[in-house]
Image (cartoon, rainbow over all chains, first blue to last red; front, side):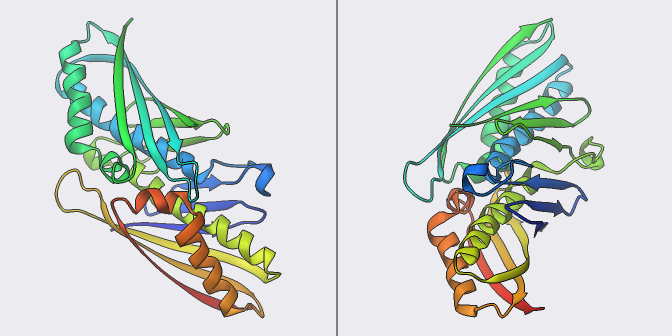
Length: 139
Length: 139
């Protein structure tokens, strides 16, 4: 079981601490009474899907002996117009940087993460359609 | 549209930066090649639901002129045994602290967040059954 404690710290600020021992500050925008001292809760979902799948992709590409010098995930989420404004669509573009990287290996790594391994993706796709693409930058 | 950029920073570490300008470090456990320098991606989902609903509850209780001295959300998530180990159940206990707090007001605030306002809850409930309870501590 995964656990987190989320504590109110004034204004609209909350500090979350999880079992792994790390804290994340969340806050709202000033137009809803916050002070923007931390991430929006909905942003954490996009961060999570990028980190989760990123770890899978790095892990698989290392096993495939690829020389990776960088990986970025650009994630965007579209929320429903009506309350409660859930995510209806999430798009991720992976930018893989490396030397002589095999496109086949990258394609397979991204697909394995999306289809089989990424727990965050599997959780979010209950509500949101997940679209993804990748590009490789030789450097 | 909500956006986040998630960047690989070595080992299994990723740093996510969102549109609001805040960064969150993610890392894996040492048994999967990480160095535990940041939260697990799956932990961010639990932090997010606690923060999102916490902001709703604080906001509603302030409008109802309740004297709130503290709010915590204890969140736990149960993952499926099989890959991709998505969340199948998420439990949240809210602990509301205050002076002369109306139980009816707390009950209504929690229900409004869960049923109507919390975008993170609405997104996660596509996969996970969300259970919630509250207790009030007079102080």
